[in-house]
Length: 382
View 1 (cartoon, rainbow, N blue to C red):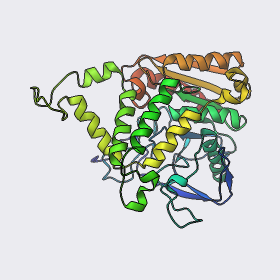
View 2: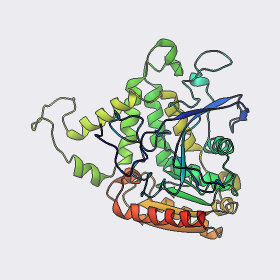
View 3: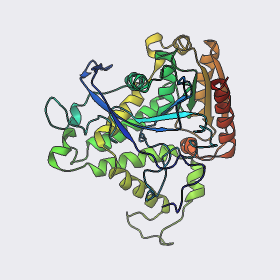
View 4: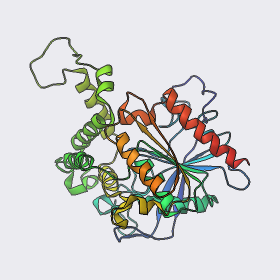
């Protein structure tokens, strides 16, 4: 708990639930007659609504990107290092919006919500959603907030996919897209990791075909294993080695199968904590959205053709030790942007932190990120 709020914090923030009663037909063909989105905003929208920035969250993210909900909070929002006065996304210059996506488990309508047609939780009956579906709901949110065009849409990992999709689906509604530690589509290896995670969840005896709420249980073991697998892919070998090495908890071998190495203990702790806060059906849904994302799919697998729709300027950032979404995947995207004659800036950041590097405020990362957002701010204030 902070004794006082840092001077570069957005301070105490309060999320808001917005209800949408206009039906939305999803890519899977199903329709939601209504839905809620939980939103947080930071900073002040200017007179012509030209300084708005949308933050798109990654797989396990949510609307609470910056600041504190109360002075009792132990930690700020998940991207507090990048959002606030004087930070790369400077709330003295920008009006910042972050939401919990449709299908989430932090207040927006999702599998754990009540289906108005049945009066029971949606559970496994909640429709599969795609990145494009999220972008459509984010556009409805922009309409509600009176934002015709975003100064920038920004996201890391799965959030970067949303930023890219914005540039294609609503090319005239954003001026910049920042795509960080992301990819234009998953590799077979990444799809495989997601499938192992899903199988861990669905094989849990407490999963009950996704209707675990009816039984008053949670598939904690499956969620724990899914998170452990995912967490391994978010870190680099170097960062795990530096943090844990081969350190033993008790300094001697126990010749058993409990957690003897520090890294084992860490992964179990992360898995257990995650299983207490995240919904299993949402995890399945989010990983499927990752798997399905492929803007080139509708253009005969020609990414450059797909990108010809874009009108905004791009910043693409990758990290040297990110083996989940390697720099090569960002470079593939940048080459396609150049072929499509998009305006793009690219940097590979040297970082030891693997995929998680987009959440860690390393100096070079903050310098590049901040410089680009300063440029966006200057355009807004012309």
